[in-house]
Image (tube, rainbow, N blue to C red):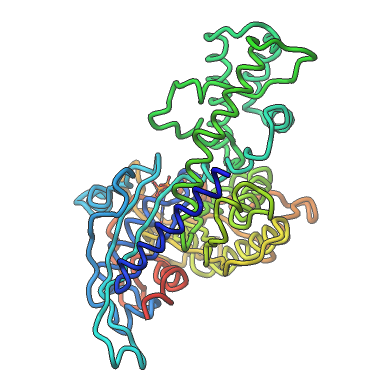
Length: 469
Ligand code: GDP
């Protein structure tokens, strides 16, 4: 009942917003992806390029001059941290450019666009203002949705089975083997278990794995050290008392769901109109088959969040409201020569097709592509033992030196990546990819080499273009 009442409350609130802002429509754009996927760089570059517009030819409203002005304004939500656009932009474009600090929590930024409508409507109306509210939030939080309909016993069983197949879990499993879940709760022991489990999740992420719940264990923010983050999966004992470790972890797990996961979906997720999901597909492909497998599962879980089943608490919460468009984008495409971009896009399309099948997804308009929010490389062709090799050249982050690299190859047919055992090849991008750590240098582009991003304008056209005409 609470969900429904709350849903009504928000619908009224949304309607009021539309009524008061009849002439000022708002688009709430969610930007998500697992940590290091490229959210901060994407938002900073998107906003900077929308404010400048000189290099956004594929965004129709920019190309035709319909967007007359774009400027930052105070955001509508007073309790969400503001996305630190100015600091991030200064880092990326300063005299010695560096990458900005990554997303750690939710943040928001309002960019207002003054748009002159085109066509028949434009002939009769003057310019109007469209607010673009960008909501940046960790993809790890989305994956927590999967916990909502699992009990502690079910989640523990699944997590422990998964951990047994993953190398970084060794220490946690060893600690668990010395722990009696039916014994009375001992707080230092609880903390050791939670710390060991968090280390395992972190190492799994570093190894390129995607499915690492609970998501707040990796990005705790100001909840670090609180009881709601001090639990871990346990094997179910035959019997347990109320004061046992097992029962207390069960209670904390339920508190995590109701006090952290649920409010996020209710207060933030449920209000989005459009969504971009950024994926470091190249990183996962380079990390190997297990990481690719994990990425596939994560994509299906993310997509499932956008189409909750009829009876789930989330569908009640959404109250019929739906995200209209979802874009899945592989980031950092500037690591590849453009001759390989169609292959990366094909991988994303195959992953999306599969995720849609797995999640039985219909509804929002979806699209897959590859992009680079900030191009750190230029392209070149080199001679390698008599054969021409398409390489990318950029300034290295640690030495500052210019260098050219060949990252290795992506499969021509994405199904080879998705079913690696089929032709025996399991390693892709096994060239220089591992050492390609470029700085966000202000690159010198010659005429015809395009803008300092790759397809950022196309992404913007898909996400918001229709609302700017
Ligand atoms: P977040 O955790 O999702 O906010 O990720 P960030 O936006 O901080 O990006 C993580 C890292 O990925 C950055 O520090 C860069 O090293 C790299 N990166 C992100 N976007 C690009 C891009 O467009 N090109 C290149 N070459 N690297 C990128």
